[in-house]
Amino acid sequence: MCLAVPAKVLSKDGAHAKVDFGGGVVREVNVSLVDVEVGQYVVVHAGFAIQVMDEDEAKETLELWQQIFNLEPEGGGE
Amino acid sequence: MSFKLSDYNTAKLIIKKLKELNLNLKIMHVCGTHQDTIVKNGLDTLLQECNIEMRQGPGCPVCVTPQKEFEEAKTLAKEGCAVAVYGDVIRVPVEGGSLADLKAEGYDIRIVYGAEDAVKLAKSIRKPLVFMAIGFETTAPTTASVLLNDPPEKFYVLSCHRSVPPALDALLGMGELKIDGLIEPGHVSTIIGLKPYEPLSVKYHIPQVVSGFEPLDMLVAVLMIALQVKRGEARVENEYTRVVKYEGNTKALKVLSDVFEPSDSVWRGLGLIKDSGMKIKRRFEEHDARRVFEDELKQLDSVEFKEPLGCRCSEVIRGLLYPQECTLFGKACTPTRPVGPCMVSVEGACSIEYKYGRLNVKAASNKS
Ligand code: SF4
Image 1 (cartoon, rainbow over the protein chains, first blue to last red):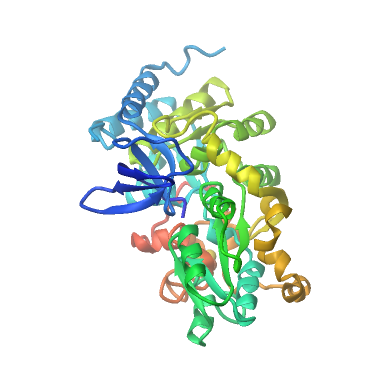
Image 2: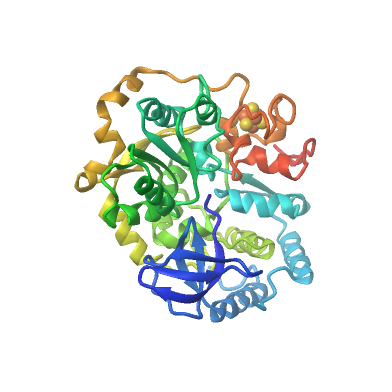
């Protein structure tokens, strides 16, 4: 039940927004728990957007991984 | 999105690094969706080659809900309320019958997709509606939100929400299983952030990493734990930076604390855990099923519920047992005829193993 799926915000109307889950699946979700603009991605759980996710964050993930791969296990620590 | 979250070469690189580190580790995670990623992609088998054993802990909200709470919902249905539940709740076996059995007898049990659905339903019917609200911090804000938004008069919430960090504390405190690291649930952490985990790293000197749900997210999280172990560190790190912020979702946290207060709560498999429940605050008492129907529910206080005969969900929930080690698994207990909740919920360890057909796999070949 903690499953949450990313979706793109198509339009907003007060506490609700139309979002696109991809593959033509468009639903209305509650966006009152986040600050989101049209065009951004949200993570949706049980009909509510629970966080905003954007593509820069994806870049951040790759950078984080790169850092980890470059870490020497013995280095850096005490 | 174009980032490479399932790159085979990256996976190979991580496995190579893990082998070089040459550690013997037991890592627990507490999320059904993580377990799905692990089993679907055979990550546990892959990690065994690196002497790393993966265990699912109490990460299935439906599985950790004790029988008494299902019985509360049944009682209120028998009292003439409509009862709205999430889809994987209705078939959970309860002594004397599941909610589905009750529905078959003609009682009004409905499946809803979320709290807003339940409110819509309440508006469309005459009789009182009780929403059995199950879920961790990921789901609880959605229930809180509808309570804050002027729900209909005869809409009641049976709060079965629970909080993950106190359960982790209880589990680590039991010390039944030596756990070298914890992978924290990505979507619970989306709401609560990293801070609530920090005391655990201090108290138990255990590395913790919040992880995303792609196979590579999880392998990277394992590597992050392994690197911490190698260096003798015990910190909370975030692998799921594209969604999880250090402070969590502050808007959702505010909504949570407006509506709920911590209360002691019983978990299946773990028993009573201090401050692990989410009780509806007095301000919303006219929507709190436990307050409004106090008299009807009182009789359940003295009832003792027995676990289904032969079912070992309690041990599965504590990460002590693999589903395949239960003698009923795949035989007397299957998704069509479940004996315990772990075979019902999509997040239950037993149902996940069954779904991917690992009926005889000894996932625990290097078990000590
Ligand atoms: S296989 Fe069935 S009976 Fe055994 S622990 Fe899992 S849910 Fe319980």
